[in-house]
Length: 363
Ligand SMILES: Nc1ncnc2c1ncn2[C@@H]1O[C@H](COP(=O)(O)OP(=O)(O)OP(=O)(O)O)[C@@H](O)[C@H]1O
Image 1 (cartoon, rainbow, N blue to C red):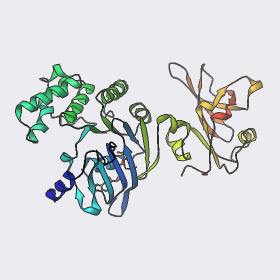
Image 2 (tube, rainbow, N blue to C red):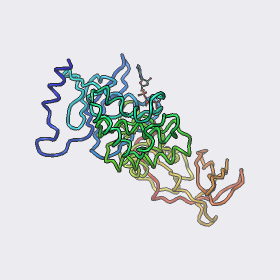
Image 3 (cartoon, rainbow, N blue to C red):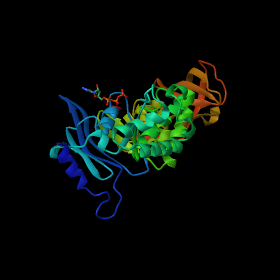
Image 4 (spheres, rainbow, N blue to C red):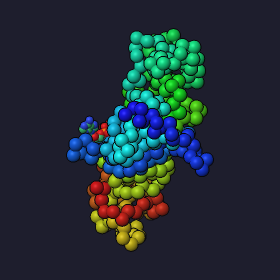
């Protein structure tokens, strides 16, 4: 099987016949079943070299499974996976390239560093396993550690590094093996909030500076939006929408995506008399997203309706006020000042910020 795979791979060109650079990752009609359970259901996905894509989705949507299929840790049931123009998995052709021959690096949430080895040895060890000779190993380790800014810390043990530095050792290990594309599995979920915010910045700039292609798996919206050029939202084993963070926020494709991204309240048309008396409905619209930014506190004369204050939280820069809209819909809005629980607020709607759907509900 391995020999067969090798011949198959070696025959495939690096660049396409038309000279175009192939996608770093290309997935076509990918399915994965565990027994009767369909975990991945027809995934099509490409990532261009040098780009960063985040896979975002609720728990159980198949993010980690998709990452494992790309890495070669799972075999798909149907479809094809290519890495830099080479097919690495195609069950219909009985083709499966093992993880170590896919040219992908992996960085895990728990860093997966060996605690008893020095930082440099952590980077060099996989090269040793691949049979890379000593002097080349040392050179590649040094280069990789320099590239991630850890050149001076090679002799330390991982436990003597910060969480962020340990994450960089993981990246160094991936690039030392020659990987240009790195799969990140929830890379920041083990870090505390403050460190996570600075690491988002650090990882994103490091990946961009090194010209790497990155695929991040995360369930954190803010993290996905800050780390990646584009975000693919996975829902029950299918890609529900893919786009830039701005597109997803401004033009969510369905009510479910609007709810998942917590963009505001999704109201079925007809459910809220006061609101829909004010808004002109396009024909056929069945629900509307009322984003947080569409509502503002105003003087009574400009008010479209008034809302009852349920909670008011101080956030440092402003207050987050949860209000009950007519029809008992809860929504959060920003307020420059504290408002009392139980007070009535006069609210204005910016109609241009509303988004209509022709699907009735979030399911
Ligand atoms: N080895 C397995 N056998 C059977 N079912 C599995 C197996 N691994 C995962 N699953 C199921 O596949 C589905 C997708 O799991 P996966 O871990 O890919 O989701 P996820 O989106 O990464 O979720 P989370 O954010 O919670 O990690 C889940 O319903 C899970 O129970």
